[in-house]
Length: 302
Image (cartoon, rainbow, N blue to C red; front, top):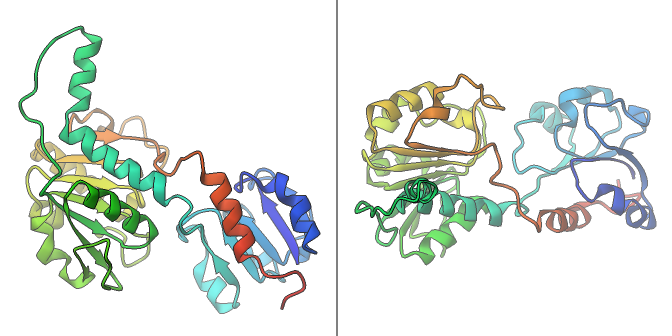
């Protein structure tokens, strides 16, 4: 297969020889926005992230295989991929561990008031906080029960939380107390102490967490968004955070990234804000490489 690798796969350059030894012909593009190092008609397979944001997929007439370095498919023209029968794989499982740890860590930071203690440490101020909370016995609702959501469930259950899932494809899963269909979201949402969003961005999930659903949540609930910013109506979230100061949001993703400097989210005291960083972990490169080699068709396969 004629393979175009991009720098979105961290170990791409180091893997060229191994791929060639398997019978593939390889071209490497460091930055996806740069000019292609080969004729687009030469390309039969790609390992990339946002390549088709800069190079229209229609200009690759012989493309039949895509391996994404992301878990989400929202940067791909999915209608074209389906219509042309292109084999497609995502980075399922690559980022699950660091993202699940990030979700748990975000909630613990809020429950244990770590920013309060950090500020007191900087000020050399000895002051106790009597409002610390426990995860034990709390209800954690995970919206999106794929690889990342399941990894989150395991970690929250280790803290003796009741873990419920909501998914388009409900199932029985030992890592959850129950997984409910999306049609039951409004029924279960008021019971959630913590809501973790790990679902993909699609037409069906865009704006899924809107003003009415935020209003239905407990006033001291914690919202953790690790999926995509547009899953939450950002304007409604800002209004809710201002109106309900006990409500807290841990946000790693936003409707527009980087987050605009003038966004009120920067300065809200009930927001923990990070720059789309939850997926980072030291073992990601080796996991991604394992996924690429596992999914890659044999050289010469049709």
